[in-house]
Length: 116
Length: 114
Image: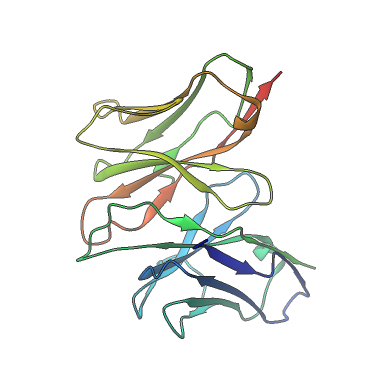
């Protein structure tokens, strides 16, 4: 089945140690998103790729970076994780044409990151 | 600045009865609204949506109502089933060049009692 896959499902990292989360998709969607969700809060958009164009949200810390080497893969890099970065990280995709989208976003299962 | 608000963090309902989940928004530029369902340890999955040109959309047991003047939408689940126990997120999309970005509410946890 076509889907969005995130790896790993669970990640424990030390304070300050760089970590990379990965997302792959078989939907051939041109937009990929990274959301951060902390306990009992709304998912918060960190950034997204529209094709190869990177779009950062204004309030996303510089500590968070992303790479999209091809259509299928997208990575979230946290350069120096802090305790406050403990959260669920959700990858999502959607198909957008001519700047419009009529379709919902499809989510992966998420990576639960714990910074210790 | 939370533009999509789900003020009820939890809801408990008897199996077979109606579940009503509420969502309020502040941005008048939102033109498309979605509900997502999330089970523990899984990502959100799309449930139902509604365009701002409509006031109701129905899909089986799920109906979404939109009241634009009140900036309010609701999700009705009738009848509620044990498998409906999950977290439900309301989401909204803005009209315009960045209309593919979704803003989410904090979610409502629904528990269906047998």
